[in-house]
Length: 289
Picture 1 (cartoon, rainbow, N blue to C red):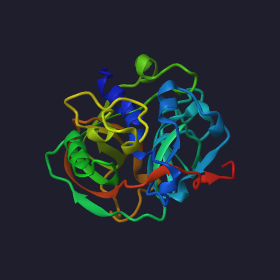
Picture 2: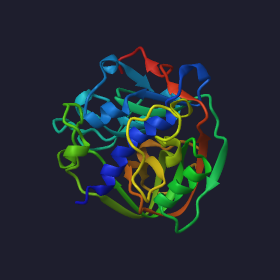
Picture 3: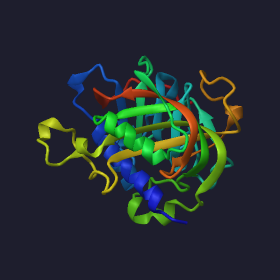
């Protein structure tokens, strides 16, 4: 199995933090970060989040890492429809590497759009384009960053998901074979609900004055890529029953990171351009569910 694509996707988590982390005084925010993407790559859990649960019903859409039953099942995830959709990584669980849906969850790195925010615009996707080309298009149009979400039919969808919990302090990038033990999954003529985020590499340019750029946790993507990105897909059994509604659990198959060479057949994405973003606590849940 080639590890290049999952490595790029994981490195993008850190680059994505640079896109969304701005000083709190710029509130009200239009994008929120909970956790530390650098901790995600380092396979650690920030002490301040160890006992915190988030409530997906307080988010419009989001993506990152999520654990429902405990930190040992931390896996790739996205949030939509008031639920988090994740793929548990605890080999001792009956839900291992299966789709799990829940309202509350734990995380060490998660990006989301506040519930009250509406999409600024919609993008109709071009048949034949690849996921990577769409990412570049979005990054060029929204250099400061944008979060996207919507239903997409892929002529060819390639996804992969982390299969072991990254919480024991063994860095992910340097030990990818330890975490990516399952092969890339390919589906043709496949519908999915996708949530992603991207920004142009110039927004992460180390040559810019510090006051004009957010703190950067990782370097921008290596050339020739022009965009840092993170894109997760909830693969569905078929076309959505209601394109205006969130996915239903009985329609969903699995969650994974989308490879850049996945080919698009059709789709519409809602766009949430990022102008003001910060660490947020509004989705913290007092409960234990």
